[in-house]
Amino acid sequence: MTRTILESATKSVTIGFDEPFCVIGERINPTGRKLLAAQLEAGDFSTVEADAVAQVAAGAAVLDINAGVVYNSNPNPNETEPPLMRKIIELVQGLVDVPLCIDSSVPAALEEGLKVARGRPLLNSVTGEEERLEAILPLVKKYNVPVVAISNDDTGISEDPDVRFAVAKKIVERAADYGIPAHDIVVDPLVMPIGAMATAGEQVFALVRRLREELGVNTTCGASNISFGLPNRHGINKAFLPMAIGAGMTSAIMNPVALPVSQKKIAEKRAEVEAAGIVLPPEMDDEAFVTLFGMGSTRPRPGAEMEAVRAANLLTNRDPNGAEWIAFNSAAGKAQGGRSGRGGRRRRGRG
Image (tube, rainbow, N blue to C red; front, side, top):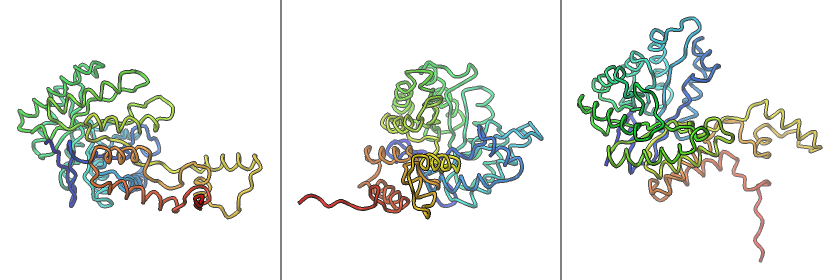
């Protein structure tokens, strides 16, 4: 049975067909996050610190570390990204003890991360492009680490799942030439947005089954890609993940955290409540307020996607005796103050 072993200083995580689904936290990534990018350029790592702790608390088994910010002061990532990658990895390892996924398009940044990462990190990533294969596979071999293999090549990303499978097969075969075993290849078959391609879900489920049965490799994906551009993305994501797990997917790079309700949304809701003539106790704090009106929480907590993953682990017999599911829901209950129903009181059953 295929098993991909990742390690931190003291912990080991196994990605495998018969293992619990591996959640790789995605939030330490400045792509699309202007505030985080600006903070990193200014040497402010407070958001990185908060994201690392919150993701592990929410259930992430591995943390993805991406330092791909383009500095306004120096737009050359080959110069800026390697030292930034080193800094972030050293910082995160001082806060949490989980394996890391070193994520970059800059080979020098990948190697700089490998030099300081404790244990056995996952390298993210190699593609089927010749230049990339020749740059990344020697690093994988040198440091004896597993690698994410993304199913695109010099021709780009194909909408044909057979082509994406062929690219994955090519990478596995080229890795074997370097003495890298298939169990150290985690294939990303590329999840297309369902809003742009109606068959995207069906395609990835079929691809995952084929990758497992024909190549014997573990799989991963950027889980939120499936819902890109659509409303209620969390609803789509939390349906997609159990279906992908059922098809045999063994990990995903995803956000395990439900983000806190912003002060702006709280103020807007308070104004709406006041306009409706609803009088609330003056001592009601923001957390009690957002809980009462079903808005979420003012604190980071496990998101709906994590709940779906935990349930899928239970339903696929990867959670013996439901211990993780029970612990997860006990923790959620404590986070909500142990309340049952609106008033926190039970009704007595009728005689």
